[in-house]
Length: 100
Image 1: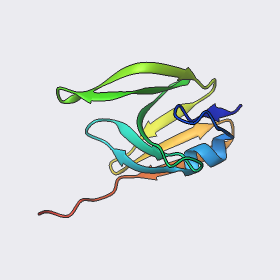
Image 2 (image 1 turned 60 degrees about the vertical axis):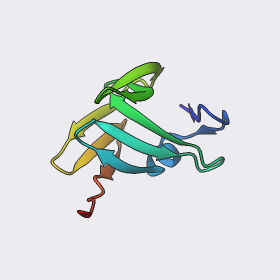
Image 3 (image 1 turned 180 degrees about the vertical axis):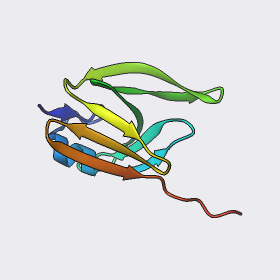
């Protein structure tokens, strides 16, 4: 299965795609992803069997586009999101923000 970048349409294997995830926002249940090819940054929601793309709106995240990824699973932790597909697993940590 190849997962596309919605900006440049490059396609990535799951390992390359999920290794490009940089931050998990537990409050909004979002993962930040940066395309390794074009540098486009997307926020996405990892859902069972799919990825949800959209925009924050009025304090919540509205999913507008869904991309099916059969077998995709997720497990929320206190400061991380564990993403698994088949036998592989990726951990996306929450980046702790410093108080201003």
